[in-house]
Image (cartoon, rainbow, N blue to C red; front, side, top):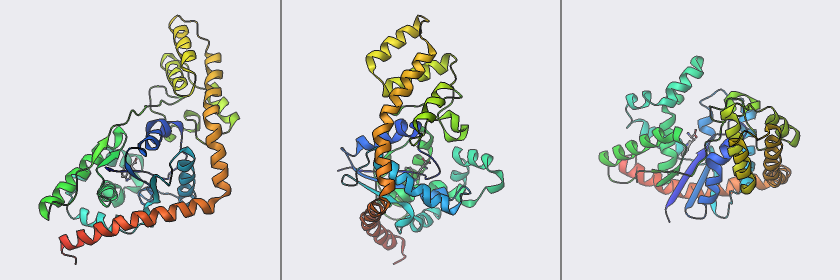
Length: 317
Ligand code: TRP
């Protein structure tokens, strides 16, 4: 079976944008591929993050992923820093990667602007570590959003450089284009739903009933805003009702207040069973830690094989 690999940084709350844009697809892909999913805690260090928060966020993220349907019987779920090999392979790749390739990465430029007082070397070599994440497992398929396509292209360049310099060993990983949905911000209807635009612009997976209702109530309802809410309704609500509301919208008869009420109800219905699972795992954290430990063990087996061969090829052994 084709190996598939993807990861997510533990830098904050999971929201509906993450779910519809990526995680829903991760759950579905478990049926078709041999999946490895990981929590990119080493990547999170490229921004200033409080140690306790990093630890908590990593575990919370694992809980959220499990609650959304990542199934440890089907996919290997682990924390990046638990597996030896990611940083070691990244170093070898660092020595193959031209600095100029790294400097032209859009994410590097954007992040450097966002944190001008912290343009650390990790921010620059971030995509090298990402290439190592993927190639350590010799994964061929990587579901990522549009914003990560450039990094994935660099992973292919790095694989090619390694193969040319030493021996054909790494596959060139390809993006799995998902039927991903671009979920828009509740406050800035033209922008993607994101944590960086403030609490009121997104619905978090762990938001309670009152918060969800309030956020939806306060959502911006200019032309684009209403269309966004309708689209969000189409993912969580009843399709017939969606069509009816869409027609009402076209003829100018749709009441924003009733759309918002229906949408809040539909989202809460989706969130309820997921949040019940979250509560379960929050009360059984040792189970989650065991799942991560077992996942790391599985991942380590593959990583060890790769590193033994890579060291041989490179001349480190
Ligand atoms: N850079 C990715 C993001 O910000 C996270 C990530 C790290 C990743 N390593 C990866 C994604 C390897 C896919 C494969 O979303």
